Image (cartoon, rainbow, N blue to C red; front, top):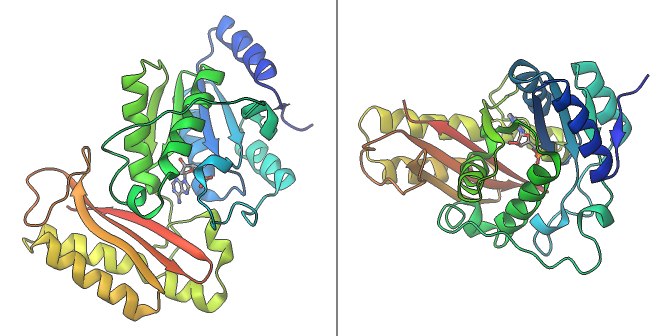
Length: 282
Ligand code: AMP
């Protein structure tokens, strides 16, 4: 027996209505598929938080920029559905493009401010695609909770803001980053890396973590981040998009000593992949 797979919003809503009528709480786990342990941690967190978990799989074209990896993005629905089932997930929503963006689709959702720095600066338009699809998924499902990974910390902050601003009743829950044994944050895009590149990739978190530790010990944030960026390049990365210390909630730039909860954020390119990660300054 496989799990139920909804292809249409109507099918998902009918199931959600039945579950709500039976007094079940529902958690939504939005993903782009090619699931790994990071995604499965979101499903497990959903199972702890709610009675039913719906995982969505949709490679959303509007959050990819020109020249990015939309066409080559890894897709494996059969394996994803088996992983969801194996984890105890109750259902999947796997819509066609035409279900999400029917002919004549013309609506945008923009969050100002939080979307401007970090990945917003290095991937213009990316967050407009994210806010558009996440808003749709949250409205479509009407779930009680939605699980998002802290790996995409900026995305999590943006989604929290949009649910607050638009009075979407779904509670957004952040889930800690899942890493491999070397500290590399798991990502579907890690599959683009050769074995040699994977070794280099595993230096990324080491340098970001060192910067966070240096700042926590009283070092100036700007200098610590600059040093980490240089070390990431020296380790073999092609390009550093950013290494910055920012406040955890408002994502304001910290150059000296952080006055409140903050994190070191990094994005860098290696082979065909763009890696992102972030670490708490503690
Ligand atoms: P994606 O399929 O890459 O769009 O990711 C879907 C969700 O899984 C997002 O909320 C991500 O933040 C989360 N996620 C991806 N990788 C990880 C990870 N290594 N640890 C925790 N959450 C993750």
